[in-house]
Image (cartoon, rainbow, N blue to C red):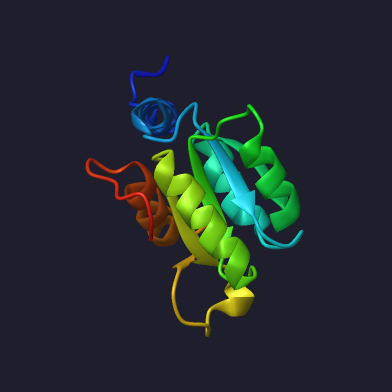
Amino acid sequence: MNRHGQHDHHQTRIFYASVMNLLSPIAGKTILIVGEADFLPHDAKDALVALKAAVVGPILVSSAMERLRGEKMFDAVIIGITIPDDAMIWMNEWLETRQVPFIFARDQRSETLPGGFVLTGRASDMNAIIASLFGPAPSYYH
């Protein structure tokens, strides 16, 4: 209730947004994005950050392979479907062995290409990605 005795819908929305962030399965997770420099659309990054995820990248495949071999561990990886096949196979095996959840995705420009999730800020796209990476029974490759 506000000072006029009316229900404050704005405060209610803020409260529910806060609760949803607390309940978000990606809150506090670090997600590595592997792909070309323009692979991660601004709206998708904004959506991930709004859900309290730390986003690293997008970084090129060669840099990703170096980072993955290093000490820094990521909670999940989103890989562009346009990376070279040999890199895709290496990353697939490396991530599976370490049980790091990952998916293959495409940006809006590549929506006509088969396979992978669509990486946009749309709620339906984000929900599908989050469920796949951090759902109750995530498989480690998609």
